[in-house]
Image 1 (cartoon, rainbow, N blue to C red):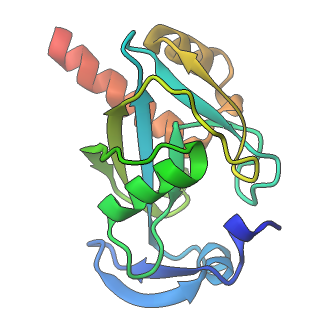
Image 2: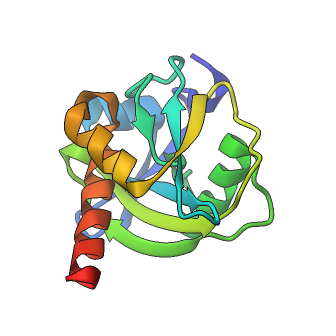
Image 3: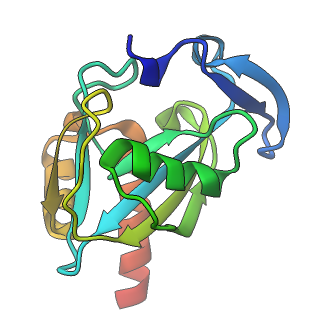
Length: 176
């Protein structure tokens, strides 16, 4: 296990209203299925494509699956917005960008019991991918993501699939 996934990493445990009620180690939180917090950031380029990462095989959760541009746990004592900025820097080397809050997803099995704030930002790269976190990454059109997710859902992280369905619903309502 690498340093980015230390079982001793501390997370805030939250209640069903996303209020902090405890602090536990990463390994305890996951082993016990406790509610906790995470962020996902979707990075779009000037052509409207989204950058997706393929999770490193070193990851303890959902290794080798396609996921949001950036995703990570909110550390104990950290706020969602701080975490989104930190994860952009740590995972893909983007510094000085403050992503915009987009929508929130309540903790559920698909998110691994994480309350997730989803963010978006614009950046054309290039990116410096953290090898402990990301195997590779690529730009995709929205139509490509939707098609790949429909054809091979097993290739995608559960939280990302949930996030993408929500984005598709937003888009359908705006155009419909």
